[in-house]
Image 1 (cartoon, rainbow, N blue to C red):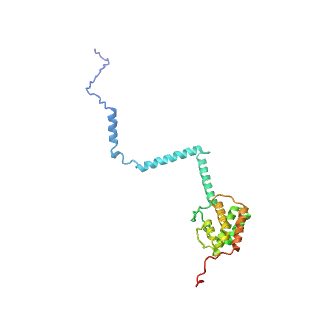
Image 2 (cartoon, rainbow, N blue to C red; image 1 turned 120 degrees about the vertical axis):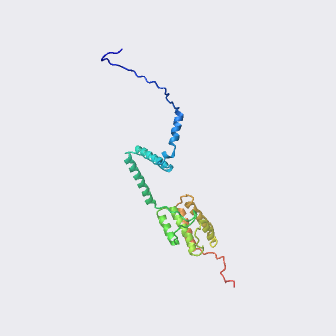
Image 3 (tube, rainbow, N blue to C red; image 1 turned 60 degrees about the horizontal axis):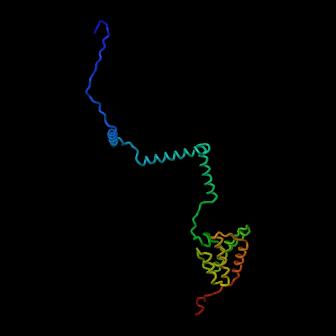
Length: 228
């Protein structure tokens, strides 16, 4: 039906015989991954080392953030704590000094700075006056051995132990052998055995030192040329 001035509506139906392509999801993903795996898409990727460094810095950043959150005052408090720790380390370093590795063996009688018998005796008396009996005994034993070296009854030998000195000194001074062994044992006990000694032990060591000064050595060898 048609008339003058009446609107005309036409329905255009377009039939199409095309069938939509429905690609399965898994093969499509594999195809995309294969395409993206081509070198042209990865020319500007960071290297393995760079990726490792990035992960390290991320971990450090997370650690610092966690520490700053736990520290009083946040990041400022963390900086203050770090400065306090550095100050404590510097104070300990200044107080204790730079650690030095000794070159002597653990049982060596003398240290690396040789002193005379008189100097060891003076040090022993200083320690005794301050009631530092361990140090007083140690210095007096050193005075005993140094005095014997100065009198040529012992050959000066670096690295000698107290026991060795006592055994060697007993040959020219056999009457003092027992006291020398006891003095060496006392020295070892307070120096390496952790024993705390007393005034009486120091007085015993001091008496030995004075008696050895007056003792006459036993000459066991005949002077060269005397038999000729």
